[in-house]
Length: 132
Image (cartoon, rainbow, N blue to C red):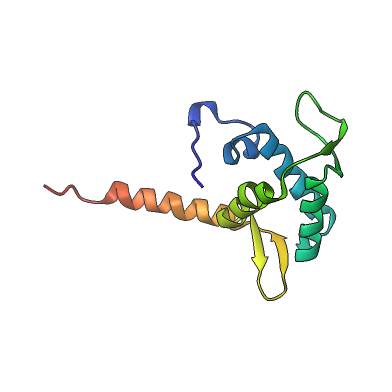
């Protein structure tokens, strides 16, 4: 996944930097909210249940984005697209960690560490000598 941003027009919401569409933002926020309500982690079965409820349009959540602020709505999002466009990118960026042995998804701060590594890579690039 590629994150493109404009430092002069940086949005207040991290989700707007990471996800391309409003629908993806709403679903990602609903996922994080669900994980936080479960102590910051979900089993593989709980994640599958979340994706199924979402797919069937049975996932009800309070939306904190205009024009729906404060309203409780039922969300509908394709299960396969949820895994491909929401969960997998969140795992690959370090926002969510999946423990293969325990089969548990956990909210992670590895994203912050990865951004620090990227910043250091850029610093090294700036320090490289000019080659003729």
